[in-house]
Image (cartoon, rainbow, N blue to C red; front, side, top):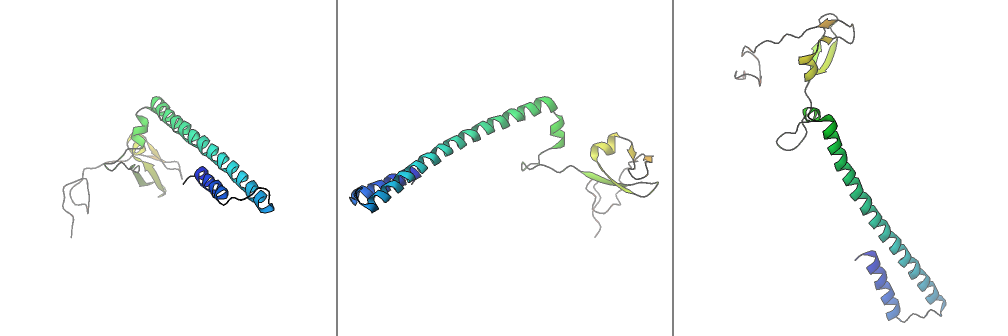
Length: 149
């Protein structure tokens, strides 16, 4: 039962028991019922207002999604790609060791393939050389070489 229905049930019980408002107890019970009824009305109004706020928030969220799509376009799709299950895939990061000082740097795939890498520790710039897989790797997923057992 909802709050208003429960309050109406209590009022019906009071009337069914023929509680007189002339007695001290009757006056207290009547005042308590009036307070309860007012609180139920207030809570119902708040629930309605909250539902309206949620509806407006959902509409704003949809508008924001459209705005982001308009502003960022396909760039957002590159950053957050979904797998078959609809879950966001994590962006792949690579650890590089500086040939000058030996410091380890973490870069994303775009940086790895499109930019000259510079060490944040010593400032030395270096290139990454990519080689073809010779099939001797252990557990490589980029070639057809069988895993060593």
